[in-house]
Picture (cartoon, rainbow, N blue to C red):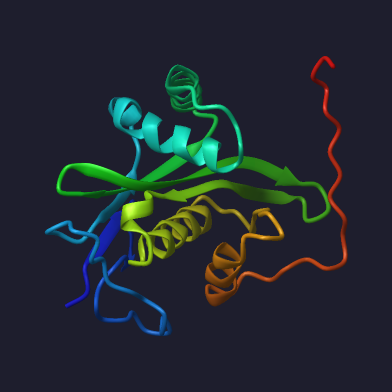
Length: 185
C-alpha cells in the first residue's frame, strides 16, 4: 500500500516503492531515514527547523547564508498568510519544502499560485520528496480554486526541469520574463 497524505479533503500518493496510478516515476526514499516522509502544511512552530533548509536553498542560488534572515522571512510569510509552505518530514526531521505564493491572472480572471521555492536536503534527494511536495502543491492549489501553477527555474537546473516535465508541467517558449532590480546600487 502506498503512503498517502491528506491535505484538507484530498489524498494522493507521496513517496513509496509503489507508483500511484499514472505516476510511473514515483520513487522511494532511501536516504537513511527509517520511515517514509510525510508531506504536510507547515505551521509557525516549524520555522526553527525549516530555517536551515530555507537558508540552504538561498545559498544554492548564491545568496549569503543567514539563518536569522531565513527565520524572519518564513515567520513573516506564515504569520501574515502570505504564502503556503509544505514540508516533508521523516523521523522528526524536515527534509524538504516547497513554498507557494497566491496571486491572480488578469487574462484568465482567476486565482493562480506561483511555486517559487522547492528544495530537498542534499542527503534526501533522489527519493521522491520533491515529487511529493509538488503533488501536495498541485492538490492544494486545485482545492483553493486556482486555475494554474507557475514556476521559474534556472536554465541550467536540468534535474528540476526533468521533475517538472515528468509531472506534466509545460515550458513556456512564447513569453519572456523580465525583472527590474529596485535595490540601491
